[in-house]
Length: 116
View 1 (cartoon, rainbow, N blue to C red):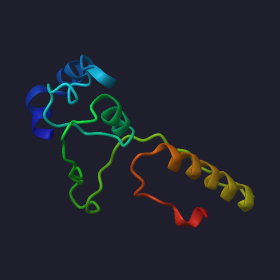
View 2 (tube, rainbow, N blue to C red; view 1 turned 60 degrees about the vertical axis):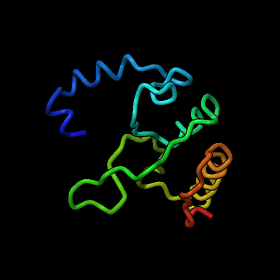
View 3 (cartoon, rainbow, N blue to C red; view 1 turned 45 degrees about the horizontal axis):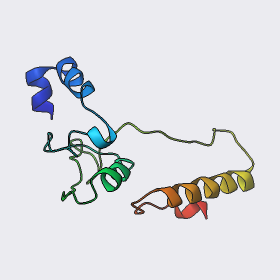
View 4 (tube, rainbow, N blue to C red; view 1 turned 90 degrees about the horizontal axis):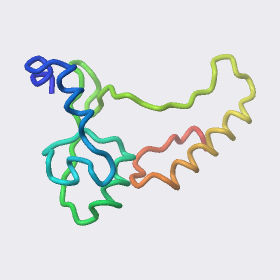
């Protein structure tokens, strides 16, 4: 990916990517794109719009010197503010969030044991 960015430039790649469709028009689903970095939420689109699509998955490469099988990615996150003191409510909030997430997520391979 870095080689493509050096060759074509970030703006040119971003412009091309902005023309891609989403959901049932996703270029990977319709066979116009060979490889795609995918957030777990994208699995819902695969299941809904291309249930018979055969594909494989692999971890994305990590930063040099980084943890094995990990990479920096953009994320939507919830956090408990520094200085919050009510541990009972913090744990209750985490349990609620994780229960909601578990019900909606198709791949359940992450669990925060300390929240239970």
